Image (cartoon, rainbow, N blue to C red; front, side, top):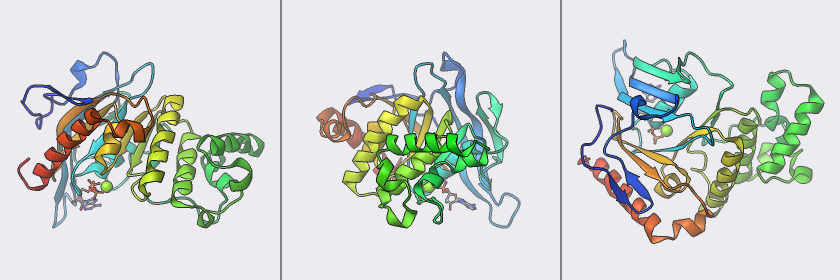
Length: 296
Ligand SMILES: Nc1ncnc2c1ncn2[C@@H]1O[C@H](COP(=O)(O)OP(=O)(O)OP(=O)(O)O)[C@@H](O)[C@H]1O
Ligand SMILES: [Mg+2]
């Protein structure tokens, strides 16, 4: 149980169940896929302006047999969401943590690895590479022969909803924002990571495209069976996609609340119109508003 845990009793709120504490290792039936033990990150710890971004964060996400968990991460701007994600990825300067342990499958993270794939908000494709060459970039780095990687690349381009014939030879500047994020998702999933780290991947998209991408992600996630950490500012998106939502406090971030939610079983638009869905969203919105007013 985290030091930041709340003590109110657990309660059902719409499609969610607000836990009275953040689950720890001792409560999981299976080995955790990701575990934080009292993790604190202070930037410039030895410099003139040290800044603690996250403080004493503890949680454990189970490695489920049937499918990975989808963990949504919500919290006010600057509370340390990207810091948390990049610590799992093993990316500097977030990695290493100042104190505490970041474990993936029981082993301390010490550098980035192919088991963890990351999708960012910014369009991170290589401008001088075609869609196919962007999607197959990781396979190329891994030394997979051309014919084999192109076959896989074509398959993934289709699976993320791009047109195999028309889009494959386009360059990033010829694509819309939604199409570019499809490329980014394909480029990550083609490597079959067991953990997918997504930092506001749909943040720059218009609402309709965003919902289409949510529907796409639900389908792909079921197929790849990975554990997903998904940072977003959209409460609807967090509740729709997540098996659980971590709600972070203001800086220095701690996990304030863990909310279990029903998994998505229908398209985004349909689900998000329902009163029980909205009830969960309003509950979280109230919590965040209080946090931002400093009353959380
Ligand atoms: N490399 C760094 N050096 C110093 N401070 C940093 C560094 N990276 C992040 N910070 C600070 O740590 C805090 C948390 O940053 P982080 O990027 O994790 O927040 P966030 O929750 O992802 O915010 P947002 O929602 O705006 O993306 C912020 O106050 C930020 O200014
Ligand atoms: Mg961020």
